[in-house]
Amino acid sequence: MSVRRIVPDIQSESLEESAKFYGLLGLEEVMNHGWIVTLASPSDPAAQVSIMTGDKTAPVTPDLSIEVDDVDAAYAVVRDSGAEIVHPLQDEEWGVRRFFVRDPNGRVVNVLGHR
Image 1 (cartoon, helix red, strand yellow):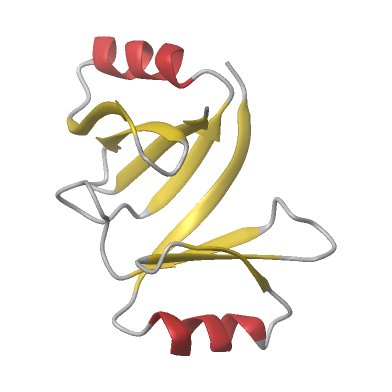
Image 2: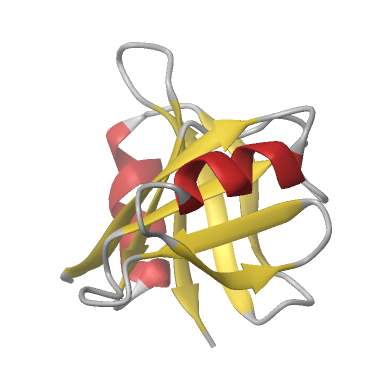
C-alpha cells in the first residue's frame, strides 16, 4: 500500500470566501461539489487543500484526507489495529471509496481511494 497524496481539510462556513483567500496564494479550484471545494497548485497538482462546510455522508468533518492506492488494504490494517473507525468503509457517489479513522490525538482522518 502506498500514499498518493495528503490533503488538509478545513471546515468553513464560507466556502467562497475561503477559496478566494487560498487563491491569493496561487491555488486554483480543481473540484467543487457544493459542500467541499478542493484547490491545488497549478505547478504541483498534488499540493492541495480542501475546504468544506461539513461532510455529506459522514457524522463528522475530517481533519485531513490521505489517498492510498489500496483503500481496502488500509481499512483492514487500521481495523485490525483496534483504532476507532468513525465512518465505515463505503463507496461514495462522487467516485471514491473511503472510511474515517480517529488518530491517537483525536484527529479524524479520511482514508480514500478513487474508483
